[in-house]
Length: 329
Image (cartoon, rainbow, N blue to C red; front, side, top):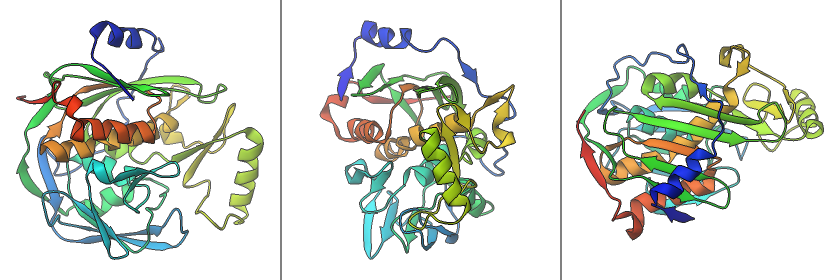
């Protein structure tokens, strides 16, 4: 990872971005009753979410509870880890908190809704739900307690973090009380290809895009083989089906959902990217005890770089000259 603070170098990164920009369709949103932007929420009482664990392929109960301390705690097998960047690990295509796998989905919801809860589980991995974060959102409906106003903070000046593949740029936001994301991806072929999407991250937006399925991008031959095995129930190690996995090869989308299509374009792949690339910001919220807002420009920006970015903002002395400051809206 390399820190870039020179404005000319940052402008150069942005100058080479894809010219065609996808805007989030206006109807890609869903109501979140009782939610107010800028407030912090916690569950009023413990609630359970049931599913099938992704790595054990076993039934799992996930209990969401009111937080017992300022920092949420995730527990499994009599071990617990605070939701802090120093406890993150890069797993197999996922972010781990200690030994708990695939935390990026629930913490993306925690960030978007500004909600804190403790989690206890009886397996070590979260499910790969058919509607991704929707089961957590449904479990929390009519079960959120207002925990007060949180201040907004933003970075004091623009900077970029560049990685072996991709980068993330964070710029101050002093006009609107939410995160604005400009995200770009690049995949072989035409099914996904190069896409760039710009959107604000609000609770109503997340309630829609938070249900985008986990994608699988492989060769056509491998994709068809996995799909055939999944439909026949022959995949025993992982809970894989056309319902919970979005299957894409370089030239074809195999199981599209119509609600993610607009003007001839399927948004589901990119919408799941939004879940992943914003999840790490929950660590920043907790570190500064405030709701982080910024203009975030990213390219590729996988799970490894997300962990590095979280640690940079939360732990690295190099971030101190950049710093954070409160914003009033």
